[in-house]
Length: 473
Image (cartoon, rainbow, N blue to C red; front, side, top):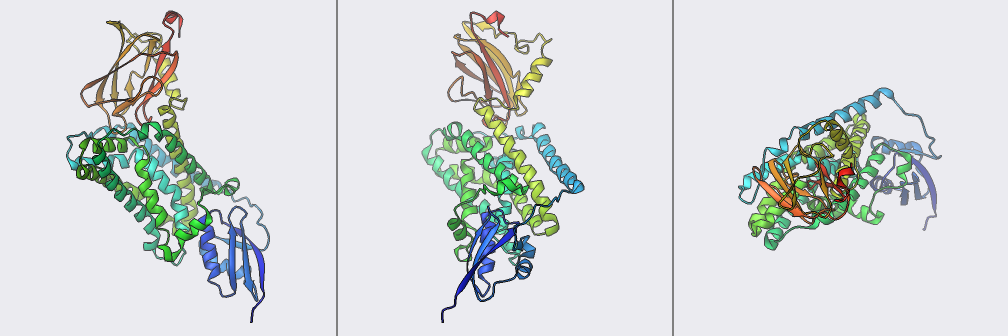
């Protein structure tokens, strides 16, 4: 006998993403009378098709209580859940971690280890460890944090802790395997890698915008629930299905994808894998580098799992993680603007440096002093370290060749090359303790940025009209 089915819409509080939809649909379909389920995170609604008696909201709320979802027959009214004490504690913890991260980078610890084509393989492991506490933490660690909520919600409360940490382990497995295979490929190719300098900044900015959207979802901003950053539902259901190795495909692919995210440390290791001209050597260089980044990335990922398992800490953790993800995203975008030669927050440092140097007489430190001309070339001299450039502001005349002499006083993987897309092609590679040279002729007037690969340290070369140089400021 064919039974008639009926449909009913429930309003659900706490359902904000595609992975939430997958979990809710899976649990509801396990109930005896429910024949089909369609959930809509953007509306906060679940449409069920059922036989006989529909499940009561009381039963559903009991089933989903531990997952943080609340079912109702009516749309949920917004409530004022602002708690000043919790807000300031969360904000304080977030800023404390951010200040610690900035402090580590300001100490110049990343300049303690340098690698080159003659470095032993264990040095690349140490090199990766340094990367894990600096730019990799901002880029890859921020990506892990931004995805932790989505990954966590693919699993029900009854799943073991081992299952819940699997996406993070699989992410890093994908990272290690791709780095080894693609490193070997680079060793075979043995050619110069231009991808990161051309397309890399746009890629980082795109990923960072995605991180910002996910951070706002972590803050539970209602407006951003309407724009979830998710794959099509049929793909999300496929990767979340238990029979399809629950949630393993996407973390693995994301881990493999990080090979193409242009962190300066990664670019250095990739370049040396290319120079090696050997598949085994290139593969080992990249594999050991990725192994070095593994401890910090695992700490970030596994910590997120631990906190998300505890209901009383989960909400606070998501807010703290949201603060960190937002910071890392803006941090990355700011520095990529330097790489692209676009105005950024780093320009504030130039303005303050120029003001403090107004009364100094040292060459180049006063913005009004022009570079001296020796043998028909404007000569610039600069020291480069992992902390910054000294000086970081120059003034030259248009139409006259420039000879730029840069002495490496202790750069790192992120700072061992200088680029300026608007002044010259390619990079100026730096070697610790040595002076590198670059000659070019500026043709347009204006202020042009130069920076390291990641844009973490930068400076400005001002080009003035050679006929009116004495009156230019």
